[in-house]
Length: 97
Figure 1 (cartoon, rainbow, N blue to C red):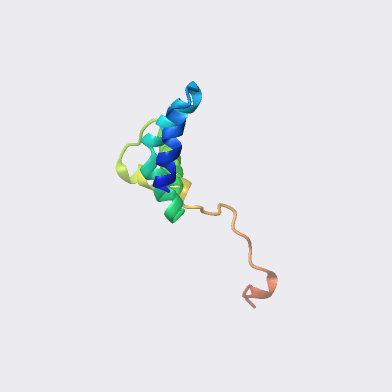
Figure 2 (figure 1 turned 90 degrees about the vertical axis):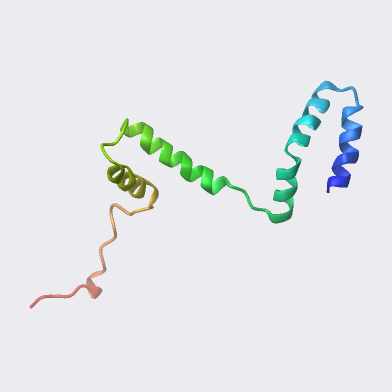
């Protein structure tokens, strides 16, 4: 993949087309990450999403009195809790006589 990229990069930088040269330089600066993704098909999108949610919790609260409240708010918003759990069907409920 790197061999192909280096040939393409040579062509792109010698093309005298401004946007192509700019794109080639941008891709060259990120080539290690591009090759890693092509090999492993893994990104850090999940971690970035979680960090974004945590920052949103922090921003909406305008500060917390202590770390425990902050940690609880993160668990609450990012934990995927169901605030309205389903009730068990009547067949599974214990009937007190």
